[in-house]
Length: 434
Ligand code: URA
Image 1 (cartoon, rainbow, N blue to C red):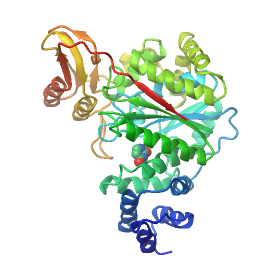
Image 2: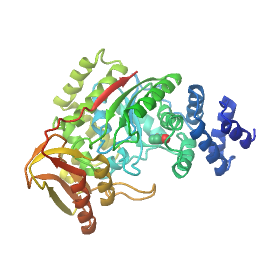
Image 3: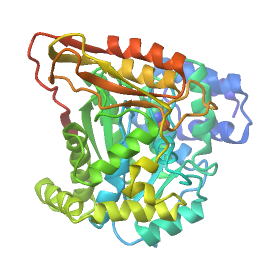
């Protein structure tokens, strides 16, 4: 099958056959299609779209482009969670041990931060010694033993996505629902899961800017996941301001530990509980969300969730002592509080503005091969609706370089808007798609 014939069919608006999609994905995996041919088809898909059947075939072909983890030896319904990414979104870190402590195995393969969005792997790697580069065999063995492993994508897992995502990134073809769906789900389905709960975010700090776009993506993810034989649900959640009070790798781990101690910020706990409730229901250990909520609160109160996190950290080479004493996490050299210029209410904490400030400090990466600084970021961030008085701190900047500290101070002063009008905290959880 000639690549140019497949490209021409999509260019002319036809639905591709399963064989054509398989040829495209095989071409990306074994190098038999040139980058310009892959890119041309990606652009044709971007412009012409894909039917639900094409999207399901594409996802299946991408999943099968590499190894599919076999977790059949692990008892129970294996459930993972995936977020489309946001600012301060450290939910996976407290959520996974909470859900495992309730009896549901959580095999979790996460990504790194890129652009404004942070990545669970970078956060976890801020724990001294923590290794996320386990082989697929070690991952399966740890899930069998502890009920959970928190690792990065291995080279054997959905390799076609790695190739195609890199091309999409440089050919303006990222924002395309069928391509996003295939990319996210192929990796998740290759983890060996039975069910998946998605956190599809919308708003300034999210990939999808509007609720309508997020709903379209969520509906597509749920239906393609179902076509792949998995039980999938999605929550639509708002991402106008950062989640919690911390943005930056070690700072977010410290905040995650606070969640596991029962001291997590209200908004972060709201999203964590909502996702956890769905995971417990899909995992078959709770009949209702209310029952699930009781179990999740129980494992925090008893310390079982924190103990599970300590166990996972130790198993992956991390310094478990840092879980009990977060001052052993990397600390930045410089700290500066940003003070409110006047009295009033916090009207806005622009998630994108805070993310760009964290990026400037070195907490994230502009290019895939940039190194992140685990210690830097922003903590004690004020929340929308909070009453503040002149001179009170709106956040604390953690930096390792004077120039970045002064630039970021100005950026954060613009991102956090104070005004006289009373404002309510924004609604966080909008909808469950099932
Ligand atoms: N995240 C992914 O893994 N893939 C996409 O295409 C978009 C977001």
